[in-house]
Image (cartoon, rainbow, N blue to C red; front, side, top):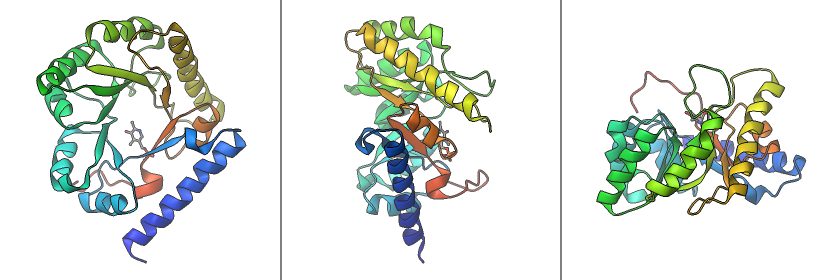
Length: 239
Ligand SMILES: *Cc1c(COP(=O)(O)O)cnc(C)c1O
């Protein structure tokens, strides 16, 4: 089996699992998008995924987006930033990203908005929310969301708010994981009901290789899948 065949097999298996989780949750599989997470995997593996019809890829580091965007310039890829974004990388993000899902603070919003205006473009963003007490997780505290989203809508129109993103607690306890997803959904509903002008609060980016089936049951509209698709990551390997 070539690596493309095994990738195709993993993709088909994953799509079947997503569809089955939707059916169990009484949801239409068309409501749940797959965001393949290609961080740490080489450009040639992404090219093979493009050959199978994938066009959006999640990456954590702007340096990797820069390198891969150059190597894969012919592929028409939409790069989605899902990792912690330093303010001094806003210029690269404004130039190269199709979307940022890890917007978690005002100084980053300001920097992105300023660079986007210079580029003459707008950017879809999701607001990252901290739904667990794990100190390693980035994101706004839920209670900060209403003011934050209103400020984005009022002062940073180059950022088009489309929804929320979270990482659930890393735990064997299914109820603890579900609780994180429920927090995100509850706040999405609340903010959607506010109907803030310029904000389309629909999307819920939640669920990864280890917990996407639970996330789908809790209302995810987008699962971010790395290892279940590309294989185990080796952080020591060059990207
Ligand atoms: C790496 C990463 C993922 C994918 O993780 P897997 O467990 O490999 O599916 C999803 N979301 C974020 C924010 C990530 O950094």
